[in-house]
Image (cartoon, rainbow, N blue to C red; front, side):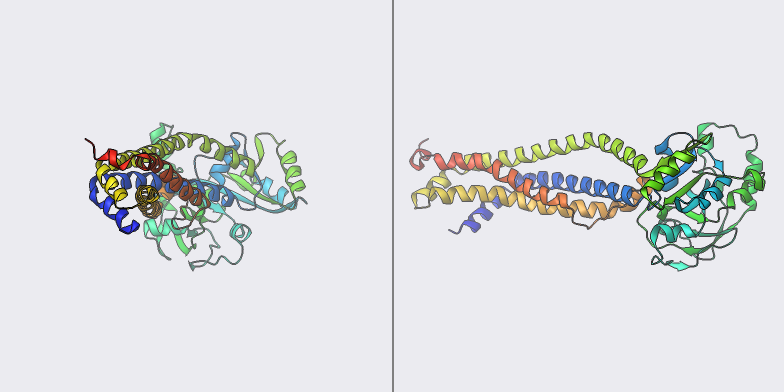
Length: 407
């Protein structure tokens, strides 16, 4: 009897237990793959999240909050800084590029961001062309991120009105004072935006934002004369690393203004998230141990059920090595089937949930990208399969075939 045929027949003989074993490995592998996709998305998002803007200036407060609001469009801004700072920075010899940003409004939950059009060339390069339409050039014109366009069904030429706040209804939920709310909302309803362009997928948080001219906030909210205008933050691309240090030192000393190293602020956020994923790692390890235990129990049951079959194979001349290989092979076959199904399920799950994950977390899942960690998953899973199979196989290997018929 050929070894492969024997292994396959034995596995099919115990369909229920075999299916449970495969399911255990599948769930474990799928969970690990999904966690790897999220981890990869987090690392890529952190790497791409701020582009070349190594220094960020904003109101005093949390450095992480400033970075998250400016580059990931998450959370509330720390406050405003004088618009006059921008002209000072643009004249500074240490500064290569500087762009002011205004935020504070939204359209259907997506932030409306005011920034000069040159931001996109500085961050993404001139090779990133518009997916459709043109770049905004005057007050009221907007371009929308690819995710915004697909989620809301926006097309070039569509018109809309924004709402005050980063998320519609956020202020009401927080119970803030709205003495001038009716006037504020009237200004928003009287100001109409027109979509003139749609961005291509950039695989950053800019995919879920609406962009327009810097002065939109002053036009919508009114009440800010040219001398006292403010912006939410200023994004700075320094000429050199030494220049970044000089900029941070110089402008960080201004009252009510902070200058931060963007990379450090983002790294601090990633470190906090990494600590939070420790619980998920523990769950994953538990699942791996359960999968190994399931394989072990399955093969122990196989040995106990087929003691006489094993004895018969030995008596007709099959070697101990053949018996050993058949049991190891059965465990490996169950492991491989579960591993393949699990990896496919993990990637498929990442693909099906990518929109929801991006909507709620801002993470871009590259669903069908093969990650370095998957090699470790494959090697580790096969190793666990072999180790879990070795015990029962060794038990059958050592038994005297004549003793197996005595009962």
